[in-house]
Image 1: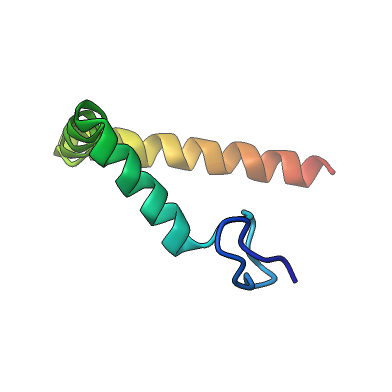
Image 2 (image 1 turned 135 degrees about the horizontal axis):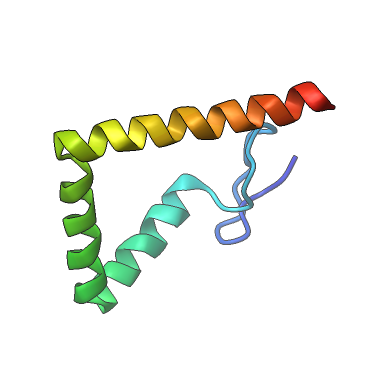
Length: 76
């Protein structure tokens, strides 16, 4: 079993990264505290994504991405 590189707790075997969620959240919080402009930009981008026209585009892009992944998997 892998463990978090920052705090050392054991991570689930299905975990892809080498850092736990709590440490990851703490790191993002630290970045936001140290760089208020990054926090502001992040919140603005989230608000932009919530607009209906952008939500549809994001859904369409996600579908195209998943179709490309499935196509690659079928070729293997």
